[in-house]
Amino acid sequence: MNSNGLRDQIAGVGVAELAREYGTPLYAYDAEMIRRRCRDLAAWDTVRFAQKACSNLAVLDLIRRAGVLVDAVSTGEIHRALAAGYTAHADRAADPTGLPPAHPIVYTADIFDRESLDAVAKLGIHVNCGSSDMLEQLAERVPGASVTLRVNPGFGHGHSQKTNTGGEGSKHGIWHEEIPDVLRRAEWAGLCVTGLHMHIGSGTDLAHLAEVAGALERVALEIGRSLTTISAGGGLPVPYKPGEVHADLSGYFTLWDATRRKLEQTFGHRIRLEIEPGRYLTAESGFLVTEVRAIKKQGGRKYTLVDAGFNTLARPVLYGAYHPMSLCPADDAAAQQLEDVAVGGPLCESGDIFTQTDGGFVATRALPRAQVGDYLVIEIAGAYGFVMASNYNSKPLPAEVLLDGGKARLVRKRQTPEDLVRGETV
Ligand code: LLP
Image (tube, rainbow, N blue to C red; front, side, top):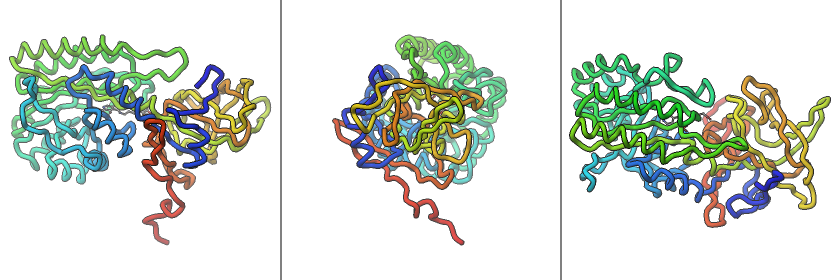
């Protein structure tokens, strides 16, 4: 995007060309940006992608090739991971550094539905348990299994109350004060606790995340020497708004590395250090390309209406989330002047506004003056974008393309009207 809010290319491919070839709305991902974000985290022993952020098979395959492992929160996500080339089991060969082997796929949840319990038992997938009921259900099916405990440290933080996963207000994880009892239950069930995981929320900041290291260390000492892996969870922030900057990741790693080293000294063996980002790896790679279809004035406010709605990108209506926007005019000469507009979509619902603040208040954005037929690009949409899209108003899910080396590749077809009614009967 240039400083006037205009953009004619994404990762070296023309916006208008993409729109003409694949139609709009369209999600486009910049492969090189994903690779770069994977490289940023190379200091960690394991980077585990929280695929819930963006689980297209081509993205998972790219991330796997970048040496990143994967988290799965459902049978569907396990299926995706396998389809993208991940193996279910760890290779038991010792790591040359003496680190314990990493599990390629970890199932993380607070419950097993019957399908996911069957899948992890059948495939031998490592489980990160967020409730003690899960421990007992797993022990029945996989006697002697090794497990990770997801612990709620009693505090949390997120960009919205809806993405805060710690404290009494959150259903997630095993409550930190329950650990002694849960360890007794795990031992009784014959399970071995090898992993400890804390994830306090999504879209938080490093100051809050840094508090987790101390809390995890305390719980690790309660678990004791069976522990071989600790996970800092996800939640790494991404700059969405003008003026926001990337967080100091090397300082964050140093803090966790020190925690890991202390535990290694206490236990007398190596500890694998994991991080589990979703947003950080894919948010900035993603662009939602839409077409401007109507422009209208409601009293003093001007609305630009595009062909994507909260069925395509739900973050603004759910959290009042801010996404940068840019315009690609159909006619090169147009659109030099900025004007304040509200941007909305096609749905029959007033909340279908991309420029809204938390609580559903319609705001405006200074954007280049648009005309019907121009393309509006909603940016930093690669995390929790397509994956949260729906068929509301019987709208088809959009296509997804991966941009690499100046070329676009279709990695998911737009849904058809037939897809919308598949499986239904009269
Ligand atoms: N690990 C666990 C156990 C999680 O629950 C999550 C996110 C992550 C890792 C990755 O968090 P991240 O690094 O992406 O912040 N739909 C919301 C975000 C919900 C996140 C749910 N869990 C949004 O659009 O902001």
